[in-house]
Length: 387
Image 1: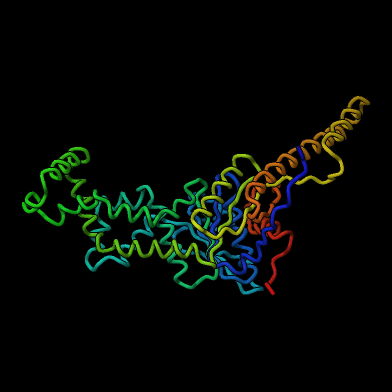
Image 2: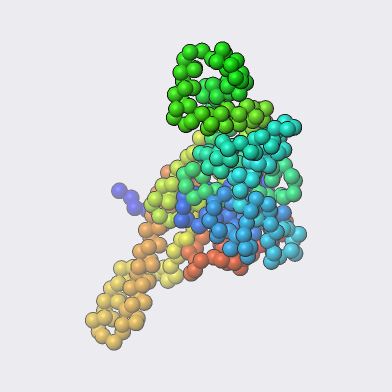
């Protein structure tokens, strides 16, 4: 069986994507440097002349720290220290799920109903922790940012898990929830009210409601019912905006970037993301393989290094040189293992453009570090105004 490597993967032209995209979504598993990659891409786009905002829905604070900000919140904050020569700018923000939900209620609820919704105990719980709410609010915030026209490019840093793509399901999940039989039943007591409620409900629904009341309590059931009744007039707007943002993610101006480390599990997760995006017909720009180990002195193989180290150790008096040779051997072996894993990924997904980013000697914690990552993403080129 042949051991020759397959054809080289297509080169991921990062600068071309940064220059033409209006939305760039970075996704990938945890621990692969996705947040740093998103920040580096946003910084590079800004210094190439684009008005850029980076939005993270990862609750970790790494993005703020790397950009010299003490904190991030639901409002874009200007990042200082950007090279202004090309006319670009950079803002950064972190999704505040509850605040975004509150803004939607205030903006879109019928007059007089916003206060009732915001004060409802069930709403307060739903807007803070209900499953799926974060993904839907991410869709809302992305749509809001795009609609303002304040930025040329929105870079989205998604959560570091497989649920990073859950926001793709938001429109369907929301419609299923709003059209569900449970919601219709819970709406009935608020609509009917008092004795009319008992007359309207059939015996089976009454029994069902009595069971639910025993499980969650009468007050909670009343809170849920009143919340849904107050929110009902907003349901159509929810659907329309969610579907509009979903359609926006399929538009020509959107690009998805999958970030992975050169490790078996991370590349397996990357394959999942690539395949899921293909199923949804979402525009994949390419794969960033982060923290790649590169070895200088490629002509000196791991085997020759080990053999030379052994000879020096046997001769005596050359411990430092032998240690350096063994370190080189380990690095060459690691680089070779990473290369094989990448070749396996590219063999399974030959049309996915790939770019490598070298492992950094330490954590990236400032703009200079982000610039260095950006240059590596672009193949070692300094940021410049596109021709």
